[in-house]
Length: 69
Image (cartoon, rainbow, N blue to C red; front, side, top):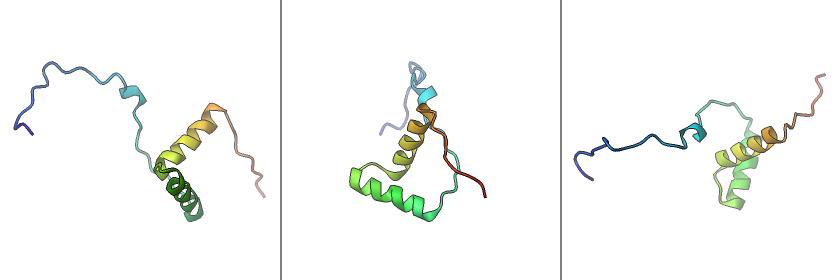
């Protein structure tokens, strides 16, 4: 590595608006284990799989099907 880098000619990341944002989410253990199992099968990280699934739900405007008792 160089001791000093010159960023004077750098440009802003054109994909910055697509970057992921870190959030805290609480998931139960069976859900985490399910996605970790899928991760082992697919070779994709479990957090990436959760993100892909949630993005698919959002794009399809899928709503949860549940009833409160």
